[in-house]
Each structure stands twice: as C-alpha cells, then as structure tokens.
Image (cartoon, rainbow, N blue to C red; front, side, top):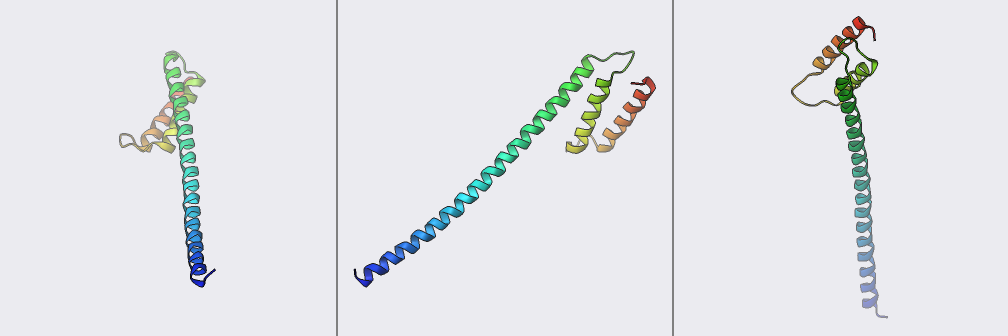
Length: 115
C-alpha cells in the first residue's frame, strides 16, 4: 500500500470514530429524554388517577349526604380534596387561604355534629 492510501484510510477511520462518537452522544441524549418523558407521563397518570379518586369521593359524599348528620366518608372526602388542592391548585379563582378557611369551617361543623 502506498503512503497516500494509508493516509486516506487513517482519515476515514478518524471520521468514522468522530461520527460514531456523535451517534453515541445523540443516542444517549435520546435515551435520557425518553426516560424523562416516561417519568412525566407516569406522574401525569398518577395525578389524574388521584384527582379522579378525589372527585369521585366528593361526588359520592354529596350524593349520599345526610341532612341530619355527617358521615366520616364525607369528612374524609373533603379533607382529601383540601390536601390535594393545597398541594396542586395553581388557578387564579381561589387562594390557599380560602381552602384552609373552608376546611376549618367544615371541621367546626363536624365537631358540632360529632362525626
């Protein structure tokens, strides 16, 4: 083999190594982003399930409320909703003080009825 041919082979080897390194870099980035997306989807699904459960409990409590006395499931449904809202609510319509105030009022009513 000639020196010129050997030099060309070496150039192509270096280009191959650089291309391979770049491909590995992008593959790692893709895998990292794929994992992050999967984690985000899991969190969204978990949040949706949690929200669905809280709303279902509130609906059940409302549909089965007794005007004469309160039940533990009503109290629990509202408590869970307040805890969830304090952690997750980001809207503009209500404030955390509203949630806490409503919760305190409900607790006072529950003490009066003695759940």
